[in-house]
Image (cartoon, rainbow over all chains, first blue to last red; front, side, top):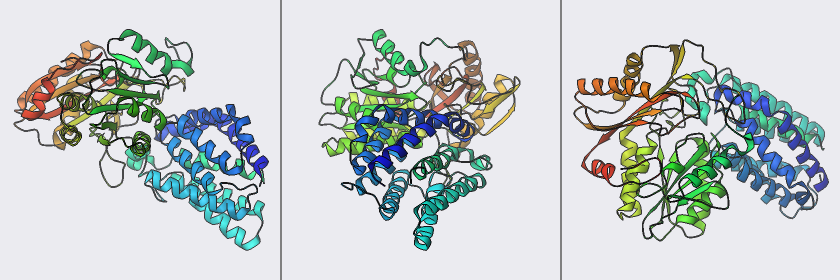
Length: 206
Length: 329
């Protein structure tokens, strides 16, 4: 992956956040405060405005700046969480021209750790981590087995989607959905869903 | 959606501009965004900052002024402001005495304010915080992020603001603010939802004869939904939960009957009529009552009842002078 692939992946993210804006907002309406799609679309819309500036940066700076824009424009809980994820991944990739799959996995791990620290959350709390952590494990496993990037990402996406399904079965203990207690069962987590869309955007460029 | 707006993308900006134009003697807007600070700055005191999503007007910018907040940061409707905005607010008001952040307990608000505090602390600014969690509708347990912060926040602004204005130090102001948090409880109900302008439709649906009991200030679900009852019966339902949460017996309280945006004052007074009677019956004496719109949810038709248990210190601070666009004492 070079910085051209990455800017194209970011373009895909911008598109998908715009096209899924209403769907994500609907999901959030049911168990949250009904703004996840709106907020993510606003943040990625802002990234779109700065696209040309981002495109000339090296991979690490580009990703870190995406994070900074998200922190400054998304608001809510998803702003600091996604912002931290991109900033941590960007910091790990600092100075790299070419990103191998091992680097990608490492950067992804940094992003996950950032989200866990910022959100004081773990797996099984009905958050984006329920898609991120299974995706990471599945990608790692497939990569170690086959060394195939495409297959690894596909495995990651399947695991993330399964994670989204899993969020339907559990009670939220973090975020605004936690106020619902058992009433949160049956509904999928908007953050886990948006993460899956972002991972698909990355996969489309590999 | 039918609203008196120009452009959904400009709702927050134009609201803040209009507010500042209405009260130039109290408020100034920073150039960096929707951050409002006091016009008549008082130096050498602990500075108070609060904020949150827009849509709760007059909270929080309406409480900027003498004896309450020094700065308020407004995010998008129902969305926490971002760390850079909060950081700008902190920088604008910070003096040697330090800054107290008053945060309503929502995941996003807490994270964004804490990130801002980390940025300010890196500049050598002393920052402390209190997190308001007065809503008894949601359970405070290991399995939730804790109770929500709602209308009781206004009492925190008033009382901590008075302590700061008096010249108390940061730890003392924080302790007084925490005392208010520990002694204030709130619960609300609604019969009609609100529409977030950017969403364009209601966040939830209620049948003509239904109400949501324990609703949050963003229209989040409460404890349950049931057929609407008489005002007195609804008050009894809410008071039962509030009074069961902390022991108010024999104490003096401040009462806040808060309108959510579309509830007529007529109905708020009907509500207060019952609240006052029930409290009297229970031997709880009302020191002061506030009826009006303090922490709204855009045009939601609903209300909340807050009870703040008072001691001598809190009574004095509640009575101290406050002069802000939305609260005077």
